[in-house]
Image (tube, rainbow over all chains, first blue to last red; front, side, top):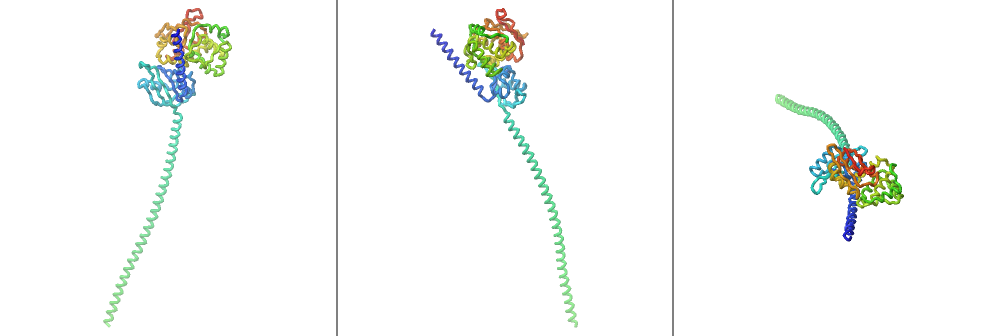
Amino acid sequence: MVEKNNNERKISILLEDLSSLESYTQELFAFTPLPLFFVSPNGVILEANPALEKITGKGAYEIVGEPVETIIEKEKTEKILKDTFEKEIVFKDETTITNKEGEKVPVNVFAQARKTKEGRKVGYFFSLIDLTESKKKEEKLEEFGQVLEVKVAAKTRELKRFNEELEEKIRERTEELEEKVKELEKINRLMLGRELKMVSLKEQLKEAQEEINKIKEREGHEK
Amino acid sequence: MIFELDKKTADDLMSIDGEMKGVVFKTDEKFILNKGGEEKLKEVEEEIKNLGYSLKYREIGNFKFYPIGMRAISLLAIAKVFDLNEEQIKEMGSFAPKTSLVIKFFMQHFFSVKEVFDKASNIWEKHYMIGKMKPKEFDEKNKIVNLQLEEFNVHPILCIYLSGYFSKICEITINKPVKIEEIKCSFKGDPYHEYQIKW
């Protein structure tokens, strides 16, 4: 009788522990903002948390019991399951999932094989990271980069045109200056010729004066 | 409404010996909330209260034991509140494995219908303290499985409900739709219930 009571008490304590453990697991599973789900070895979803319901727009009752392909496209699912089976873990594989409205949601997939104590694979844990916001930022950055490229190209064209105009002006100015230099050189040449002529005339004048003086001197002697 | 639910029916059900785990009521709770929300949950609880019994779905413990009669009362009250037909009761049964914690523990280890077939009695025992589930025939070539359920004469609503329940377990396992038929029923004069599943 005492033993029976003890056993009943033990069972009652174990049931309470089990309930507490179950409640802890459920709360943790429901709390995480990361979409989590568990997949059977045949690729059927057996468990889904509220975050997965949110990202897919489907209720757990619509997700559980359905093949993974209803969320992740078939080819990708096959690849992930194969990789997970071989490597036991798939870390950060980018893909898209389809929500209830048929919209594609970019995600990173993490998957890990679950095994029994004997080492037999009994399913896969899946976790997703929603990339919608980071993709939007990437697109904005890309858009900004493109705008910047257009602006830089426009500025480059403007600078090139300015440069060309400047070169044209320099060329024109150089030509003008060259013309002026030529004129100056011409004037200079004229001036120099005149100078030389003057010098030559002066020389001639001097020679003529000396000749006259010589003649006058000779005439004076003759008289 | 295909089944009556009155005080006498409830009292008769509550007089049946046997227990089952609270996890089955948790699947009922999820079904009600999914189909009709909080308002309907209160309506079902009120329906049971009017019969002189109390069932607070939120206070149920997955691993605690409850009288088997309450299982049928819960299903009958849900069927009454939602005015479910036979097909919809079957759907309610097929909803349960998707949300049952105990089934999830099992399903992780299932690769084929054969394994489910072999473990059928274990699955049953994890839920019900009365009745014996026996794998009767497994014909892999013709893709037919027969399951025999003995000493389980609670209420015919469970026959329909369990059809949906068993078929969904098979569908989840093989990832294909299956057909199920209750080919023998103790409420129709047979010595036991027998379900035939084809895929």
